[in-house]
Image (cartoon, rainbow over all chains, first blue to last red):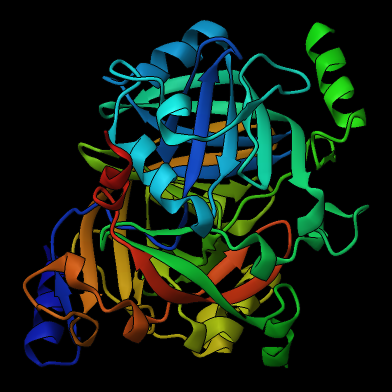
Length: 208
Length: 208
């Protein structure tokens, strides 16, 4: 109550030039990823922007997958999946995999995307995605009406021609890679723009 | 074993032009967010790129926060936090909040960022961030060596001058907003580039 009154006071005094919209699902910029489930013989793809690394030891990520879809059941059954980062070059294919269901069609066949065997798990990776992460399901929970799957990253594949130094995974040339951005809430696909600074370094300028 | 042999065969035949790097924490493009904990009197900021929406009903997100830092304990104690999206304009401030500890200094004071009261919770929002989400802690778990906090979004604040239509939260002008991108793994800050397509629409071109 007290907090609300202070907020309203500042708002009416025009000190805050912000507008409130209640609880909204809005977050950006997000990676547009293609999550593959199943096997080389029977694989499915779903487009997921709700993905995030969770911990570095062991490297693990989380993906949020609708409870009604095909992919959630496949992950629970096979206990593995791959996360493949989409690029601007395959924007149409990535969007197609997000607006269709594996119940109705073979998304690999219809999109023209190419499956390749993973190294450690059954779920394939996507050739056209320059970065592929093989994940083993280690835990999952239901959050609201959505499954949150936690995957331990077992293997990282990167297109050799996207690397400035073929021995360093961190040397990816982002201009050549051309990752696709999903602007959640605003609903736009965008390109990545110019580099503006070095993390863990540029903030030192504010140290006294 | 069989999967590995197929993989090696294709690799040596040069059919796969990918290099493997083992388990790596690499994901991009990610939002650079500033998570605020505490109260108006005693607030702290931590920079988090490991953030993702988790479900739409009710709108909720997850953030991964190191177990050793100051912020995790504050979230467990106060059971609320805000997620504030950083822009290119405050890149130095955002980076500063990621390479310093609330144990050593007052990050609001030292960075020059401005705290403003939230509407429903104690943790403040950051004035310089054009999008602010008030979150109530609903669950948390330890993943590897990191805390994963699940927050229900109670309120969404957006700078009025970043909206094309002040009545629509989805009408944010991304060029004016100028969100900061964190390229995880490659360690770069970048701008968002041009719009390239409409989600939930452009994929229809591949439907038969």
